[in-house]
Amino acid sequence: MTIVKYLLSIALGAALGYLSYKKVGCPNGSCPITSSPYRSTLYGGVMGFLLAGMI
Image (tube, rainbow, N blue to C red; front, side, top):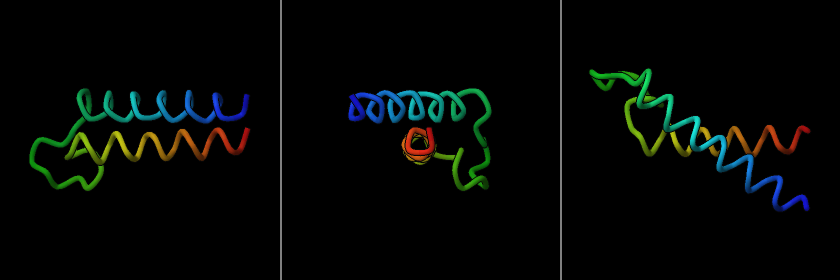
């Protein structure tokens, strides 16, 4: 059951990371995380994994 918890939290974090890229973003490319959809998705997935580990 813990694997499912981690996978769901990674997927949710990645989705929220991509959503932050689409909604907030950084049009001129000066923001290190939100300037690329890959970075923001990866960052969100990592944050979701870390939050799942804390719960």
